[in-house]
Length: 284
Image (cartoon, rainbow, N blue to C red):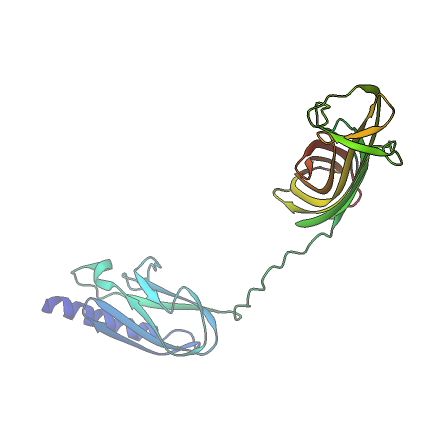
């Protein structure tokens, strides 16, 4: 153990003499043995990238592969008492190393600039429009359109109609079931019927992927089917008719500039329909 301390002491004396001869940027160099560790302390005049090289053959060859840590091998701010710790015993072990030399290399560096957070900017809302068609349990085909905008989130408005308003203005005297029964009676019917259907809805969009958006909507809808009795009066078929709240859920597919929408719609959860929209996105 005594021999090891003598070897390291000799190493430090030679090393300090070499260190003190280095460039003006590194000054006041001190070296202290701490058991198996060597601590080198120095002052740095200007902020610099600092490297410490070590030679074991009197400066013929230098290496930066020794086990050193601390204020070294990076940008070091100016200041006093910068420390480097070298695990000399792990690198060299027992032995006589009288020709060890140290070399500081510094290069002035600028203070690290604070990293500015990257704020993703929205590309703006994308405007779209589709022509829609639907058909469902009421048996009334409907057509209409949807317009809206979206980015991460969005909105839309949909208007639909059955293009047949025969039901309006006709006196309806009663209501019948889906199979035509009025109470327990099945009356005689003419083949004539009157239908009418309208739907207005607003809703929201939410991006699931770059090309797929979820859609939900709510509004007012009316699907009315009236069958004519033999004597000429009309009765509303409640099985195919509904008036009240329209709700929808579906998807929007953004295929480059081509837009497809698929929705399921219900009026008062009494009649149901499937709705398809085809259209275009007008902005990038």
